[in-house]
Each structure stands twice: as C-alpha cells, then as structure tokens.
Amino acid sequence: MSINRKELFSKSRRIVIKIGSAVLTSSGIGLDQERIGKLAGEISDIIASGREALVVSSGAIAAGFAKLGIEKKPRGMPLPLKQAAAAVGQSSLMWIYEKSFGECGRKVAQVLLTGEDLSNRERFLNARNTLHTLLEYGVVPIINENDTVAVDEIRFGDNDNLSGMVAHLVDADLLVILSDIDGLYSADPRLNPAAKLIPLVEKITPEMEQAAGDALSAVGTGGMRSKIMAARKVGAYGVPMVIIDGKREGVLAELFEGGDVGTLFLPKEHKNRSRKHWIAYTACATGRIVVDDGGRTALVEKNKSLLPGGVVTVEGTFKAGDCVTCFDKAGNSFARGLTNYSATDLERIKGHKTIEIESILGRKDYDEVIHRDDLVIL
Ligand code: GLU
Image 1 (cartoon, rainbow, N blue to C red):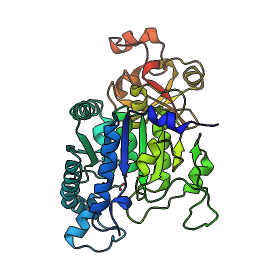
Image 2: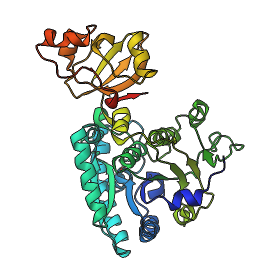
Image 3: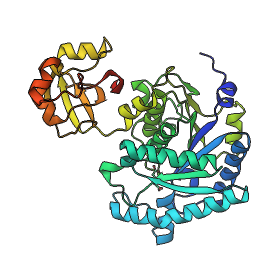
C-alpha cells in the first residue's frame, strides 16, 4: 500500500512526542543540554506551524544518578533508589526544558502521572481537562511518570506505554517516538548486520513482536517491544505512530515535510470511540466473569449485550461500574466491559433470566450485566 506521508502528517494537528532517556543523555548518566535545546527548537517550530505538541520525557533517573554521583546504572537496583534518583533528576530535567523552551519564547508545565491516574475514569478526565487547558494557553506539557509513588501495580512501567496512554488521553493525531535507533528493523541491528529498516508497518504481526525481542536499551526502561505495544495500543484507537532517530538533527522537520524517515505504524482504519479504548486498554479490570458458549456467541458474533443468563462464574470483588474481563469456559479472555452489577449481586443473578432479576435482588437497575456500549471485544 502506498501511503502519502506528507498528507498524513500535514493533517496531524495534535502531536505527542516521546523523548527517551537514551536520546536525552550522552552516556546514560546526566542530561545532554545541547540536544534538549535543539529538540526544544524543533518542537517549537512544529508548534509555530499551527500544531499542538505534548512532550513525554524520560531522563529523570539518568539525571538523578549524575547528581547523586552514581556512575553506572547498576542492574537490579532497589526501586526506592531509582525513585529517589527520579525525584532528584526531575527538577533538573524541568529546569533544562524550561530554559530551552523559554529561549524559543514558550512556556512549559510539569505533569507527572501514574498508571492509576489513567485507569480511574475520574482522574483520567481530570488529567485530560488539565492538559487541554495547558494547550489552550499555548503551554508545552512535559509529562513523565510520577516515579516517586509509582510501584508495580500502578505503574505505566515505561514511557513508551505512558506516551501511548497520553496520545489516547488527549485524542492526539500522531505519536512520535524519538529513540536512539532510527526505526523498527527486521532483526536486532546490533546483533545482526543484515537487519533491514522497515519503513511502514500496516499490521503488527507476532513475527514482528518476536523479532523485537525483549532487548532493552542500555539507558531507558523500554525497548523495541514496548514501542510495538504502544503502536498497537494507539493503532487500535486510530492514531498512527512513528519511531525516528532522536539524535539526528532536524529529524522532526524532515518527518513533517513527508521525508522517508523511521518506521511508520498505520492505525486500524476505524477509530474506537475514546471510552471504548479506555475500557480496552486503560481501565484496570478488577473482576473476571466466565461466560457460557451462547453468551460468548451473542457478544462476539451478534454484537449483543451480556445478560445474566450467560454468566457462569463470577470471580473477584467488584462494584457496579467497575471494569471486568470476560472469559470463555476454556479460560480465554475475549472481552472487557463495565459491569452494571456488583460481584455480590451478579453471584445471585447469574444463570437467571432477565425478568427474574427483580424478584432475586428486590430491584432491577438494568437488564444487561454489561451493555453493548460498555463492552469491547478483544
Ligand atoms: N520515568 C523514567 C525517567 O524519567 C523513565 C522511564 C522510561 O525511560 O521508560 O527516568
């Protein structure tokens, strides 16, 4: 398929730009002020061309190590030390952004988020409103994970994932990943000299994920796999993603002029509605519902809602309004949705007809356990 990059990028108005640690540091320790300055200039030019830009920036931990006199990134470092380094480094990171964007006549804002902030619908909407307001005021949000409080259960884990979530949060038109590698290769180019750059990915295949391996960059916490996962996420929401070499000067301008740089991941044609995307990828599923074969067919093939009659087993503790995952009897997850009934109520009405709900519970709030509009087939 031939794709007119220039046309695609010229239509992109709201851009999320992720800058990885490997781009922001020269040797993995400390920040490369000159490079950040140049990137701020390039991003300012993008804004001057009538676009909005949000930056997702790593580099706090790398900057913190330098300030704390930690020379190498020891593997298996205790989490509190990384968190402390991030706290120390985040202010330096912001100071450099403030200075660099200030020189271009632009203001910046620090926004620190955790995974939990975006899986809770209310906090998701609060974050979204704040970011929209910052953009209205022409401020460049500089977003990072709130490493101080983020432990495993509430983490994004890496900023590739975070940038994908942010692209969704603000309804971005494009996600740009600035990396220390110029795109996705057919194999790991550091290990295989015959590896070729893939300029366009129309569909992410299991082979691609395999080839991306688990290889981590020496500095950041992501790797090619986390980038592919981010592409998959934003792609499901209708947002294209590009990976380009963030160390190459002028690369952003080149990209927006339609130049053949990096790897472009095309999104799925149909945009999932924002809420559905939130259900599929961001909301934290607190319960599991096992559905019988008839119920599964109704959901997957007939586009119907889940009724109590189709529910076989209820697992976990959840309230009405929580996100739950639906499994078939063989244990395969096939859908996620927002339940209208709590685990306790569902336990009582499972397997029963809709008309029986009222006599069992003494009330009937809804006919459906999960309404079609609140359901996403995985
Ligand atoms: N939040 C981390 C930092 O600022 C970066 C995480 C990542 O690189 O993926 O250092």
